[in-house]
Structures are given as C-alpha cells and as structure tokens.
Amino acid sequence: MLHHPTLDKLNALKFTGMSAALTEQLSLDNIDDLAFEERLGLLIDREITERNNRRLKTRLRQAKLKQTACMEDIDYRQPRGLDKSMTLRLADCHWVKERLNILLTGPTGVGKTWLACALAHKACQSGHTALYCRLPRLLQSLPLARGDGSYAKLMTRLARTEVLILDDWGLSKLNAEQRRDLLEILEDRHGSRSTIVTSQIPIDQWHELIGDPTLADAILDRLVHNAYKLKLKGESMRKKQSQLTAMAKSE
Image 1 (cartoon, one colour):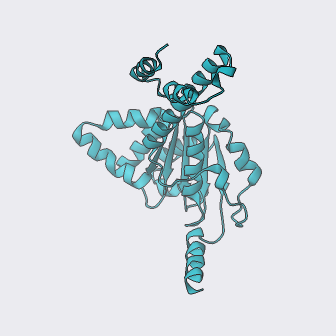
Image 2 (spheres, rainbow, N blue to C red):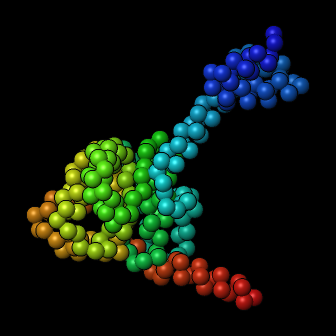
Image 3 (spheres, rainbow, N blue to C red):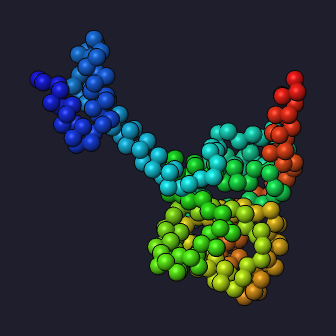
C-alpha cells in the first residue's frame, strides 16, 4: 500500500487529525503490533480531538472575551466573599442548560469581569457560544446599527448567543431609547438563553438607574428572578497586583 497517496486523500478531505496521526504511526517501529481496528480507532480519536479543538478556538474567537480567564485559575485565598462551592457548581455549566442568569456585583477591581470571562470560557469548552459586550458601548452602537441597516442582524446575534456578558451595567442612567433596546435584548433571551451581568451597583439600586418604572419592572423581571447572585467584596485586585509589582521592583 502506498502511504503518501493516502495522506494526500486524508488532507484533501480535511481529515487533518487522521493525517497527522497516521504520519506518527508510520514513524513507530512497533506499530504493526496493534490490530487494524486499534490503529483505526486511534486515527478517529485524533480526528475528533482536533475537530473539537478547532471548534473551541472558533467559539473563543467569536466570544471576544475581554480577559483570558478560566475557572481552574480562580484564587480563593483573597477575601472577596466568593463561595467556592457555588463557583464549582457553576463550573459544570448547568446554568447554561437551564437558561439561568448570573449577576456579579461588587466594587471595582475585585474580579467581576475576570470571573464573567472565566464562566463564559467554561461554557465555550462545554460546547456553548458566548459573547462579551460592555453594556454602555453596546447601547451606543445600536442606534448606529439602525442607521446602517445592521440592527436586525446584531439583535439576532445577541438573541442566539447562548451566554451573553453585559459588563459594566449601571455606569449611567439609561435614556428612553436605551431602555427599550435593553428590554428587547432581554426579552429575546428570557427563558431561552443565559446572561451574565457585572455591575458596581447593588442589585436593589438597578430599578432607579433604569429610570422608567414600568420598563424597569419588565427588564428586571426578565433578568433578576431566574439568576444566581454573586456579591463580591474586598480590595481591588489590580491595586494589590500593583503593590506587589512595586515591591518586586524595589527589592
């Protein structure tokens, strides 16, 4: 049997994992000790692994996560009020399958955005799609999207994404158009997709920040009542890191 034509055919079919695995097998002296079925199984396993890795890279690229973070790197030594048992439960991504939300609140620098990105990264590893958005910038982009005709496409993407991060919720009060846009986003996702919100503002103050009482009720009803609520506290992690860096330089 001619091996090179086989490799060419595998590459032509875009079976790059099988091609790489076959090339490795051909370089092993004792590969003939394995039965045909075993060798074929190894080739298929390699192809599945490579395809899964490519899909994960695609999901992470499309997610545009602000920070490179993963659940395994969470530092529980810092006194931030982070419940380890809760985060371990969230790491299994059942909340995505159950279409539940996560609300992360606390002062600036305690790691809300990092944790949100870690949760979204875990969701991507589990086969779900994700997207990171700073809420102020998203709300500013929607009127522009109306003007250039891309509004419907953007709203469809927001609706279909399985895990949507809305970072920096509540930095300023919303105007009438922003309230309506936010309600549309959450209405499309309610009961069918999961949303992660990070905010420096306590949840009990969100109603006032939204402004219009009727729309505030509608927005929060779709967001808060089916959500895990994680309230972080403590000093800024960025401040501590800066202090550690300064100490290292002075030594």
